[in-house]
Image (cartoon, rainbow, N blue to C red; front, top):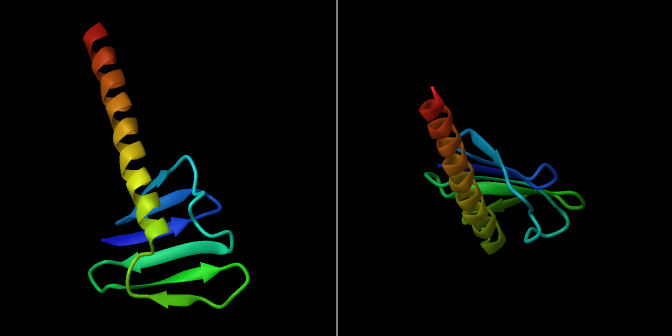
Length: 91
């Protein structure tokens, strides 16, 4: 799985599927972007005030944001499914 977290936009991409989360408060203030490839266990963090840092595992704050992404995406999909179901039942 490939992960991209864009802090300013609150976007998280998991294998090219993007979803905007409610907040990225757990990320350090100077982080702009994190990219990570789970299959290769390598990635990097882009900072606003420092050189990029190569990483071989996701930091805890990134795992927290990914968990939030999964939860909020699941909630969104449930709402969309219910709306579609209600719309279909009216027809």
